[in-house]
Image (cartoon, rainbow, N blue to C red):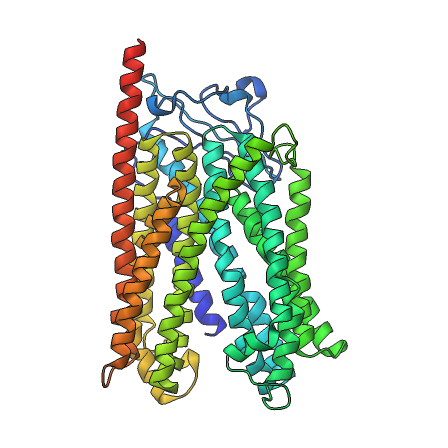
Length: 567
């Protein structure tokens, strides 16, 4: 896919996101108002509101305020006005809750403030998602143009290996985001700090294990991807050099994912964007130096990427050190060992369930790709092209899901069900509007999209038939991502892991059956396999949200009864 296509897509999505967020209905009910003001409007300490969390920060970020007027969350401990800063940024961001005389939020501005908060969280997350794939793309460009087709082909299986090895552990990012946000919502800042410290150490340890496995099992792993032995397969030498050099970056990659989840949990999506941009710039500068000037070939491309990823990890480490006081980051002492063990056990339980979810999803996509490969070169080429287009368009839904995770995580921790419903409502509205626009954009660009992926007439024809399937799938995908993001924020990790496993098993069976049908093509595979996967995910997520809603209603009723008995 060429640059102009991506720019058109991103510009259109940004315009719609801005329009949707700035045009919310003023009469929608909610009990929380997010007031985000510019630095010149900062009020002095004496004028800070007593009814909400006023977060001053010295770095990029948005602090989330919990409404104090809600009876369900009124048992939270601590004075909001005296709470320490949770997020640091270069611009001070005051966040408060404005109340009317009846103790509720002002309806005429609350929705617009909530939408602005969603935008402030989603836009940096979207840009960060778009920057992340840039590292492998930069390597492909330099290697393809400077070293030739053989070296470029050698990168293919290596990048797939890293995608699987590192992609599975993105589950740690989601569990960290949710657990940190829920701890902050419950006003348990010490537990949030414990989660960040323990998840960081755990991530580095996992990264070391991955790096060692890739180094020791380089040959067999490449063999599973179809790369032969050195001297037999022309790809082997370049593939081994790239895999071994880039494998050293595994600790930094897993740590970066956890650190990104931690900052998201604190309501800061700008710092992860900065770290991603820094890594991309470093890689862009070092690639030609290490590939051509140092004459390291594909190993140089991998080394440049590894250095870039360590630069991002170092950025997070420095920021953690600078914000150790406000984020309550400290190594557990002997006195706090029991609390630390409990926190670690909770984190491992959540991360294990999310790892099952990520692994199941990767298995499902691998099954689809393997079935497309068996159908022939034309089918798998069309599948790979349309899959990349689908994933790029779905990144917007993932960005909205990040906002959902953070906000619902905060309100879930604070036991405020009304705000949870309002956040979900607004995120669903934004997701539906943006995804419908992107579907229309895909239909409008349908005649030109196949030409972005080459000149083969057969592949173009398959792509032309797949575009309507993907265009209609986008709204469903965005809704699924928001629903599942809500469940992540609520801490329903086991439900997500189990439901994804069931959906993967059912979809894999459908995919295998379709692949055996005579005359079946890639279009039928997407309609029967991919659509069934997302429909099942939507059903399971809907059931999970309904169960969580009923559980919150029961808890609220019990809490109200206990308060009445006390009175």
